[in-house]
Length: 525
Ligand SMILES: Nc1ncnc2c1ncn2[C@@H]1O[C@H](COP(=O)(O)OP(=O)(O)OP(=O)(O)O)[C@@H](O)[C@H]1O
Image (cartoon, rainbow, N blue to C red; front, side, top):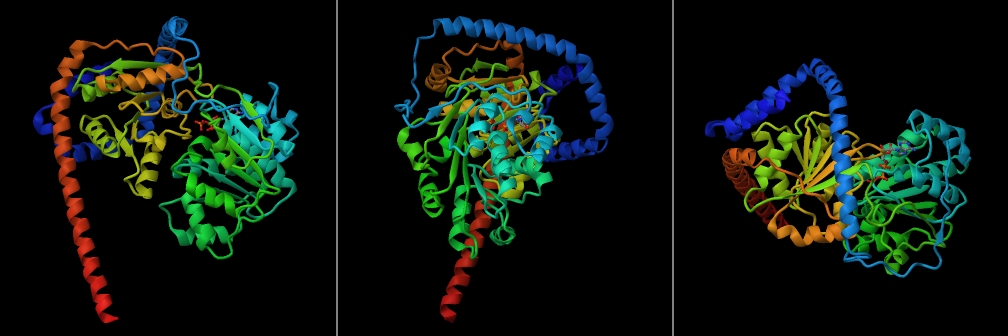
């Protein structure tokens, strides 16, 4: 509490000369120096956290109760059957078989090889989650699966376990391929396969964009059992890497399948699907927001799939408290800083719509001494991995990201998701807020709603089937923060513009040098 008051006092009283980017670098290195004494500090923090846990818990329970009551009230008032989303439900597929609700008390009841049961124990998976209980038995019978379950409900293990179980009996290179829409998610899925299949000696490789093709080709030549890939780079290797083929592939998984089956990935996915066999191949589609559009599902060429749905298409978990804040014009940055100050000491992901906004907000946070890092598609892969690692290791408490971080990422420490910009489609909302409250934990999401976002938020509330309760704000605090935040933002915008100009100039120089070299080559020919 004292820490928060001190931070607030500092932000309010920051002088203009402190709000310069050179000051950030200085403060950043001070922060790094403090990190060196991290062990003592972390211990201190955790004991402090421990002592306030009871207080926080009861506060959280109160907030949750209040929100639940409000939600209940709101859902009673909400119009029935309002499905306003762009993607209307398709006609149910007759060939899909629905499963009976299944329940297992332990993984040993699932008839898995002992190595897998042991791996689950080591990972502290005491019993299968509902989606695992639903999907693993038909998967072990060799069925194609369409799996729909909320964010953070263990879908990765739901498809990894049956594949690894089968691989144990039938060890072959290039046995299974898992496709994911982002590089970071592909890497995370690889880690799950490694921890579940390590004792079995499973070989996995991650094939994603932004990494060296030759290194990847070398990894593929080591004949891994499982390839986890983003579609574009996989296609590159299928076309260009000699000796690599997936003609004997036994399993194809599309994680975040609705995303992979949409327009952006559609063409490359079609090309991959043409190359790999349909006969003798088992296909799994998993997502928290699965499409039921028949033409999209047909693209994946499933054979009599079993539909394992433990949630509805837009269901969020009960342990997630979702609220919104109505933000008057021009005050979005101030509201964000106000919130970060309110949740000081917590770990947050702030989602923005554009890469430029992600960069700006992360820089603004750092200038105001909230330790943040940015993750977006304009960064190179090393920077992306570096940012995520800093956040995961707790060395930055705020991750400011575009939707590149919206799907799949499993970072248990995330307490809060803030939608700085409201996502333009409701599915993104479901995935973004699902970065918190995972695996039974509690979490909170807050959406900043300006006058321009009203339609978007109404659409989101419509698919959620309830109104999101409004957060109260201390107007006095907002007013006193406003000047400092605006000034800091002005500094950040100027500095980022300067850096961009420099980058463009460097790029032009490089291009013109390349151009003259090309001309030289031509002349020499
Ligand atoms: N049986 C289990 N018991 C306890 N924890 C589990 C179990 N299975 C998976 N988990 C944990 O639950 C967390 C969430 O799992 P996972 O990332 O697979 O969720 P998901 O359903 O794929 O989420 P998303 O839709 O966001 O991608 C992970 O940290 C994972 O280790």
